[in-house]
Image 1 (tube, one colour):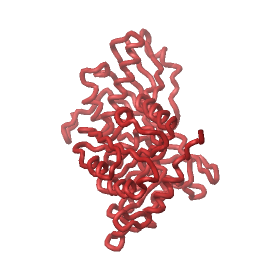
Image 2: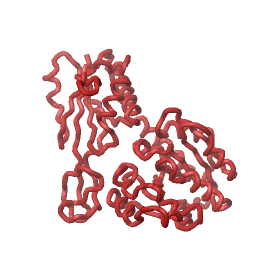
Image 3: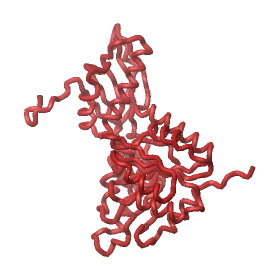
Image 4: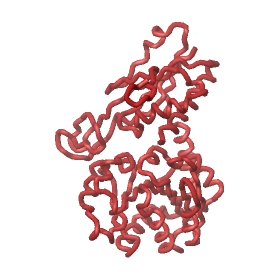
Length: 113
Length: 253
């Protein structure tokens, strides 16, 4: 249940940014959560509901961009969508790959008022 | 409210599936009178900063730090007991023990004569860089030593948290399933060495060692693999040799 730690980190980042901008209300928070990051969305949502209570993020709309996995094969340089870490390159069948997208875990933006 | 289970669906939540990055330039026109802040900050930013601070401290003192991760019961503590005993006098060791409760593991390490700090995470499922920072402050390890950080037995959560280690070592025992690297890929993906433990039990369990190795390599093609038995000592020399190759000899003064 590391999702609660993740939520607490998000609250911390949002609170600091709002303080910096002299804002007391966050209307919306936008995050990138890659499909290959170690975050389960259901667990995240559950942790979110508990975690944001009585914080600056209570009531804020959440926008989550799910970024799909993408990899490049080291052997044949093919770029392909990667659903699982163990997927092989569809062109040459090798597992020697570099993951280039899908591991994002980022607070992208806030809308303050 | 969800009619099936009664849970509260979060009406504020929007999930967008895309394979590309989002453009933000049009935000201002969408939200007149509101202030849009582009944050672009890694959610684990605080942990990562502290991890780098730990890494800097460890590098400066030429301390080799290894983060040992596995599911509970794979034999992390037993592997440490053997290592600390067998290599006593050859290398200087320190151990940080992470568990939810008790100092049982720290007591076992202490019995080998090694300096050890126990971290109890309470309800926490992983160690983080902040906990390790404080453990290091209390421990004051000397230079040119080896620090083992035995993480909480959990094959999921500790994968996300950089502690400032040089190498991450994932341990799996032959009493577990040989498909574990596929079921818990994050940990195998983020590790540099995989130790397969309890190989003395191979005749008694339906564990295909070649299959587990192939599965681990599918998830992480760079992963090194060493097979050991802490009971009969088989393969331990490979692990000790690997460890010694990672220790950087101190610069002559």
